[in-house]
Length: 192
Ligand SMILES: Nc1ncnc2c1ncn2[C@@H]1O[C@H](COP(=O)(O)OP(=O)(O)OP(=O)(O)O)[C@@H](O)[C@H]1O
Image 1: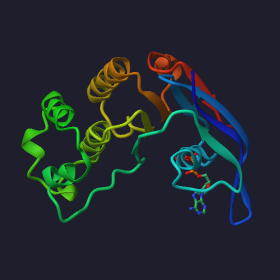
Image 2 (image 1 turned 90 degrees about the vertical axis):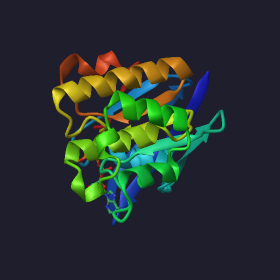
Image 3 (image 1 turned 135 degrees about the vertical axis):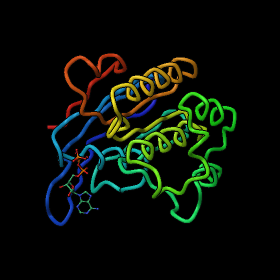
Image 4 (image 1 turned 60 degrees about the horizontal axis):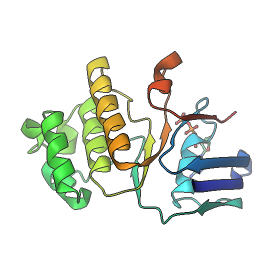
C-alpha cells in the first residue's frame, strides 16, 4: 500500500537548482534511506515531504494522514530549559520516553542544560525526543552523526525494533559505509 508519493518535485534557492524532477514512492511501513553527496538536496527533500519547505513545482501526496516526527540534522533544544523540561515539551508518549531514558541510561543527564551535553549526547536526546512524539512517519536526518560505534549499534537496534513493532514508515538520510544501510533499509534512494 502506497503511503506517500513525491511527484516531479523541483526546488531552487537563489536561482540555483537543488532538486530537479524528483519522483519517489514509499509504501506504508517501508524504510527508505536517502543517500547522496553533501549539498545535493537530501535535507531539502525531507523538509519538502514534511511540509516545512514548499517546492517550486511538483507535489507530495499522502495516501494516509501523516503524523510526522522529524529529527533534524542538528539537535535543537531550548537553551534555558533542562533536558527533562525540553523533553516534556514535545515527547508526549511518556511510556516510550521513559523506556528510552532507561535504555540509553540518560537519567543522570536530565537535570543538565543542552549546552552542558556533549555533541553525541545531544544527538541521543534528539533521537529519544523524536521517537517519543507520536507518529506514523519517522523522518531522521543523519541520526547516527557524532555517535560512537557502541551507541550507534544501540540506537540502530532500538530503531529497528520500533519500526517493526509499529509498522512505521521511515525516511532517513544516512552516510553509512558499505553494507550498514542494508541492516535497516528496504529501499535506498540516491540523489545525484
Ligand atoms: N533555506 C535555504 N536558502 C538557501 N539555500 C539553501 C537553503 N536550504 C538549503 N540550501 C542550499 O541547498 C543545497 C542543498 O542543501 P541540503 O541541506 O538539502 O543538502 P544535503 O544533501 O542535505 O547536504 P548535507 O549532506 O551536507 O547535509 C545547498 O547548496 C544549500 O546551501
